[in-house]
Length: 278
Ligand SMILES: *[C@@H]1O[C@H](CO)[C@@H](O)[C@H](O)[C@H]1NC(C)=O
Ligand SMILES: *[C@@H]1O[C@H](CO)[C@@H](O)[C@H](O)[C@H]1NC(C)=O
Image (cartoon, rainbow, N blue to C red; front, side, top):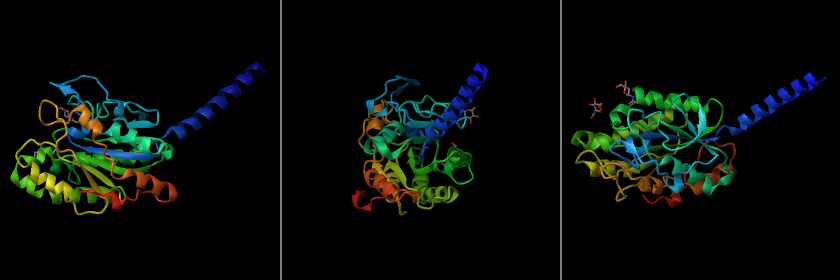
């Protein structure tokens, strides 16, 4: 009798756990891609991260991270530690973004971040068919396997394309093609894209790339401007404080969340075009 009872308790425990686990899976999935300032170098000096986490980037039991092993875990800085693994990662924009999403609408449910950024990469390395592109699509699809909805692509890249005039000049068409391909290959033709206009670059053609970023001619692509934010001593990477203050969602999210809630069948955010300032 005791043994049967024990068995029942164990089985019941299992069922409850499975159920809890399903509820734990993130519903709102955001892709993080680009190069080092997305992967995060805030607080990294000479290859060592100081380990200081700004309040905006603190962990939250509702924020998850999709690991290199394709599992979900509670998200903690550095978000790209097992993705951009040949570099020292520090603070990027992802945690501050996710905390801000939850702050604006605590009822939105769990947020899942899919880190895909790799330091030092140029836009050609993200073209359709490249390893990085395939990884982004593959990881996102794997993240969606157990449910959830892709809410947006967060993109911060272009520093490597400021070295040559030709690369900078082609940046706009390359970036538009990249966004269009990602949307097509994820089956989300109006997937919102939140991107960052450069604060710095590896070469002299920063302004050409910034103009491209601020002038993207596709619907539902929005840009926050990082120009003037505090950099690390290397003059290339955003400081932890700058990454934390980036608020990649600040122009858009209130309305997005509202529209998502009022049209539960819609699997995409609608952007609030009345608030756009770029
Ligand atoms: C890390 O370095 C190894 C060896 O050089 C290389 O094969 C791999 O592609 C690199 N990975 C990333 C993510 O940069
Ligand atoms: C992009 O980076 C790769 C790898 O460093 C390099 O081989 C390639 O020439 C670069 N492409 C452009 C257009 O700059």
